Image (cartoon, rainbow, N blue to C red):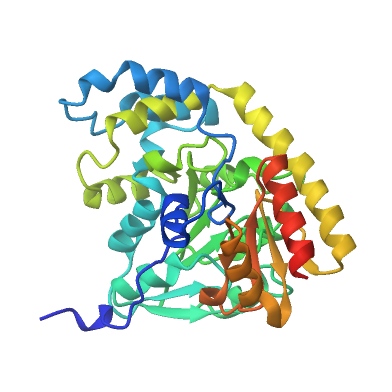
Length: 358
């Protein structure tokens, strides 16, 4: 009755929402530091435009996202026909799987990369080829060594979720130059806006060189629109054309498009978010250093922290205190917890509770 290749797929389990935790535990005033959301809230400009257009919900959205594609085109200096909009990066990953992966095709993935990548490959009855990271950073040389005639796609999150680490410009440039023209490289840049642009690769340049690259970005993180589910892919015209063949009609709802269009110009809010993250990241580093526990320096709005054998105890104890963080067992990192960088009161409470528990 069912397709055999989906029987062993574990559904993706997102972080628990605040209301669910408070209902289950009978507590109030919880902080969710589990899903890397922007804890300043949504872009104010997005909120204003959404409120104005609630009365138009009886109409279907613009299926081509014409105005948002053109705004992205102008900002990023890329042809609108090279942009594909999706219901978050998750749907775009699904579209990539539908577009490229045949049964038996191989995809090169890191076991410490985003967990949705191997799921997409399994759904399409492809084969995952896992290449371990080197000190929690993608080992691009080892990935190149695993490319063969069956390799169809390589997934790289840069910066990576859940490690927060990044591959920098020279190494990525060298990797892209050496990759076969028969292989599609997906560069998932959900946390791009948080990076140091002096060190980070300019991935859009790869498209100018006609490389088979798909760059994924999102409005969920820096713009605070995770609840609207909207992301975009930047690629070649030919790849975008093929992706649009399998993209569902009206996949981006009208409020998501309007909110994203307004958020895109909310530079003041973006600057405020980056300033907060950089300041609070330093605060958390200093406090964690004093506690003397290991963490990975992060290029994102979260930190991966190693609690050793106490990780499960710390996770459950923090949960009882109304602080929701993310366990990493699903990534075969059972000793680690991922913690979103929040506002200062949130981070203070996290550190205070952590000191008591340790």
